[in-house]
Image 1 (cartoon, rainbow, N blue to C red):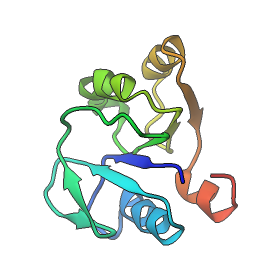
Image 2 (cartoon, rainbow, N blue to C red; image 1 turned 45 degrees about the vertical axis):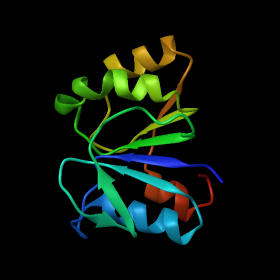
Image 3 (cartoon, rainbow, N blue to C red; image 1 turned 135 degrees about the vertical axis):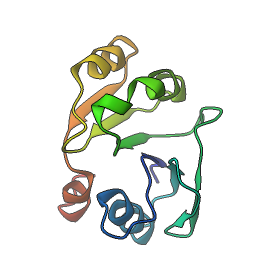
Length: 119
């Protein structure tokens, strides 16, 4: 199964990152939660950004473009197969950096992808 890193994980049930974490776990996908606030989502602790993982297939972004620059190196050094820019996270600068690093990026909604079998 594709291991997914949720960047911008939240314990707030009204946030899309929270909904996606729970949907991924229900569908059997292993997840890593990265965020700024301590807590658990879908039974998985929210971690602070630290050493990049080496087994991530997908990073799904829930951090606005104005706050993404501090994550650029982390995202690229994690070497995911793809990065999903969820609505409101679109960032051409980061997309160019991902492309240069050979990482696929797409502007999509992870929740819709999961609900329609496109994930």
